[in-house]
Image 1 (cartoon, rainbow, N blue to C red):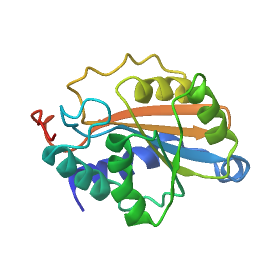
Image 2 (tube, rainbow, N blue to C red):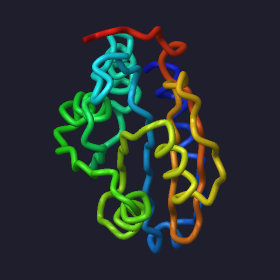
Image 3 (cartoon, one colour):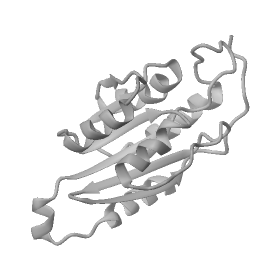
Image 4 (cartoon, rainbow, N blue to C red):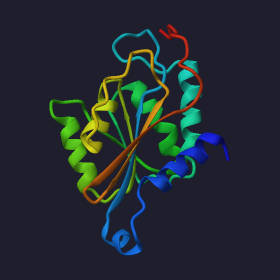
Length: 180
């Protein structure tokens, strides 16, 4: 197993340490928040992933291979859907598209907290990914710089408690590509 996968599993296992009585009464959820992988510079309206972005997505699939995902959310753009799609195929989970209308992050947060899914992937953007971590985990992360693609936020929710870990995966962020 690759180092990042081992590290991810160790972090998840150590995020909470409830007793067996507490564990039976907790509804533990783990939410994996990722910004879409490297995007093309063209077309401007709805760019796809670069070749380096597709490599990063393959690494995300590998990192999450031992997680039993039961829900995947993505905004309806080529770059976010093509980040989530290979993960969805590997886990045989349908992607739920969430249009970025006013208040959608708050609505998605409630859906995650109150839903039945326990292991969730959310494919978002440089601004929505840290903001979702903040809403779920009570943190205060800033928006990601436009050049940062290698962050994976792991939010663990158990009862009224939350934990947020920020990991990096794949190599350094790749070069821009004109794919138009």
